[in-house]
Image (cartoon, rainbow, N blue to C red; front, side):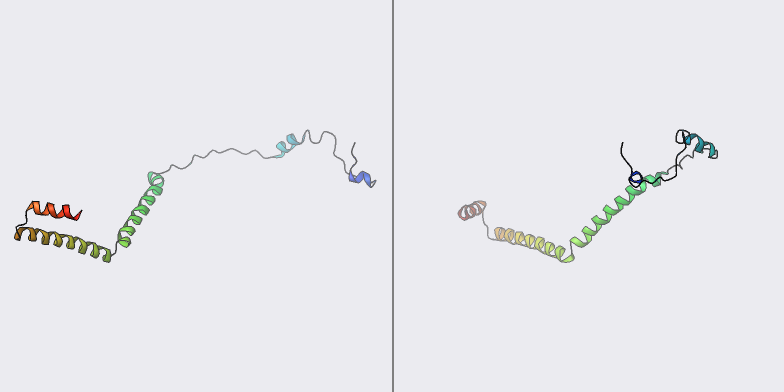
Length: 118
């Protein structure tokens, strides 16, 4: 058997647990506790808005992000440049069409021109 620290110094603590103390401890503690009635409360009902609120907030967030992209990603300079390019293409097309119409250029002449370019 192992010796304890107190046995090494030849000293006794002077305290001793009575026989059967821990076997009846649970019963004695339960006898000293007051009786308490157990009340089971039902949780409050959850409304539709409480459940839908996170989804509505998330949809609003994505709508705001989309709006910010629309507002800040395409500045007025970009829109002006793209409009000018579209106008330039239209005016170039009109110039070519006018040249073909007024100079009596045939389709075969245009075909020969593109064949020579390649």
